[in-house]
Length: 103
Image (cartoon, rainbow, N blue to C red; front, side, top):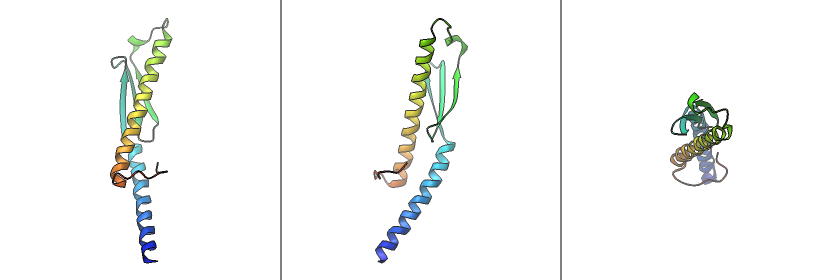
């Protein structure tokens, strides 16, 4: 029974560490660009887009599809980078073990 108690303590410690990490990741951000930097998207560690910047030179009323594609590319890249950042931080916390269901 002592082993089970130690395992429960370790699980609680891991849970507390994960909660702290989630708070820290919400404050961290990554940036992605497309169109040679004409579109910039920033996302946080909660995979939320927190800002989009569009240079006016890339806005062409006759080519809305290009603008949409550039925004989509930058958003997807920012979210991918955010997921990679979270994965790296989680790996540090779990010692590289892949624990199903975490974040």
